[in-house]
Image (cartoon, rainbow, N blue to C red; front, side):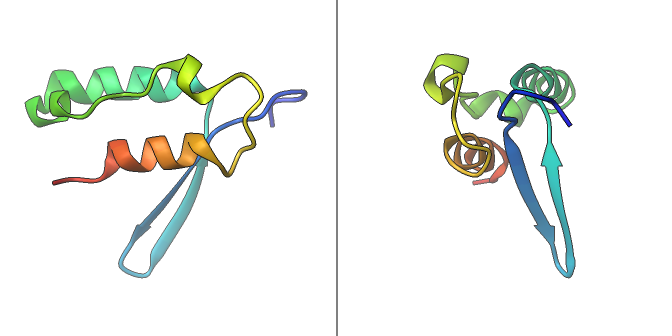
Length: 74
């Protein structure tokens, strides 16, 4: 998909439907900004800085946890 790089994965499950979404950090950040513009409550979620995720993090570790925390609603 993205040769030579680890790409964050977000696992999504809604009832019986499941998806794995693989995107670069900047794509998740752009999505976050678009959602903030449409839904004010998204502004309450802290999007993790890129440095917090690291440059060489495995696809199933911290990025997924950070993105999952972003997607959870209170």
